[in-house]
Length: 300
Image 1 (cartoon, rainbow, N blue to C red):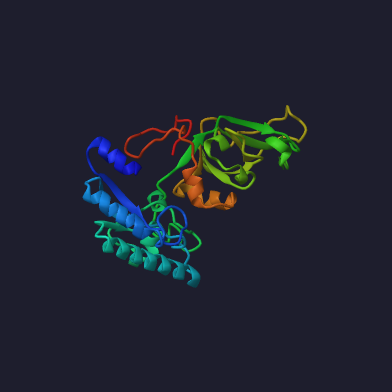
Image 2: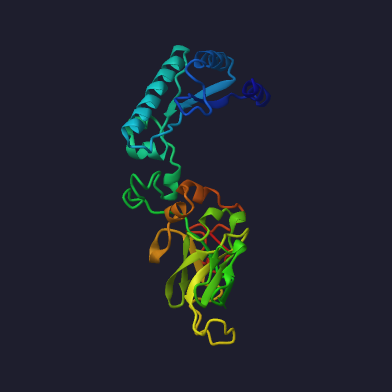
């Protein structure tokens, strides 16, 4: 009713894609309800209020190569075909049928129909690295998240890092501060588990995340410092990194840079969550549009 009212108001038909619930149980019409919907669409189309451009659905286990997973996908296809038949019986023949997201594109060619919807594949990531990694699929991660160190200093042996004291310096250590945190979409559950690569004047340096991720920053371990524990005035040696050196949280894996998949494992989640939860306020630099990103607070 709302769609028809809007079409009347603007004086042109609404272009719609009908979703058939093929087993995901989210949005979409079940086969039981579809005949009534199809009839309503037919009447609206006859009045010039809607143009049924497409019919579509979404699969719940297309990334699962097990026997049960493949059976689920086959069921989705069967229900989708039955739904298309219901629409056809009502005189509705959508010009575009689409069912496959990235998993379907890669592993289920029978689901391709007239159009496919690339999601996680646009990031250059695998829908399920346990089935096939991005490298296995010849995908190159398209997103890099990085930020310059805002602090580099020495802390003494036994000194805790960040809230709760969940990490304590085992020796005198150099530590760096990365200006990104859970307020920016960095998962707190990655605390004490993830790592970054700091690109220093001497080359890339692997730096574990230490202590809890804070709202807008976290600390990384840059390695041991010279001097005796408990002697703050002792010489610390040359710093392994400098303020302004770029810390790469995840990228394409160049120079040992972590991958989004690495952060997903550290946070016990999936790579989808790692790349989609990044805050809108993080500055973006797009390849081909920016020639210098070193000075940005963070970019992806």
